[in-house]
Image 1: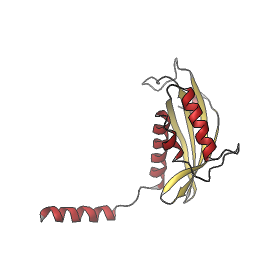
Image 2: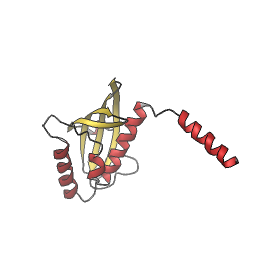
Image 3: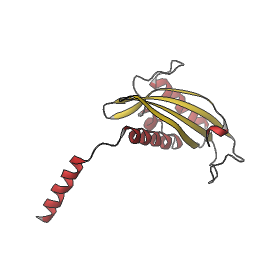
Length: 151
């Protein structure tokens, strides 16, 4: 009987808990994307992209997935050093994220410096939209960035 009471209280508490704040949800999505990229998991990465995705170069979700597959095949390993520059919410169901990211084929030193590492540094401007209860990428624009953007 006691275990039934504990279960009932637990379920009641779970029902009262609120969903994570939008910023926490977006940060979780970004962490998922980073993990999928370093794992070279195209399926997991494209699952975070909206079916309505369209970037400035006219790429859709399927084209983006194909580009990721080629990139992952060409690189034995992928290591990322990222910094979220900003997260804005222009509307309750929209988010604009800016990320600075360094991509390398070898691990970054533990002090998070780029000393002795050949890395490509990019700025990613990401537009997200809430689709149901999930956030998905609607557009990503990237351009070259500087080491100073990471720190």
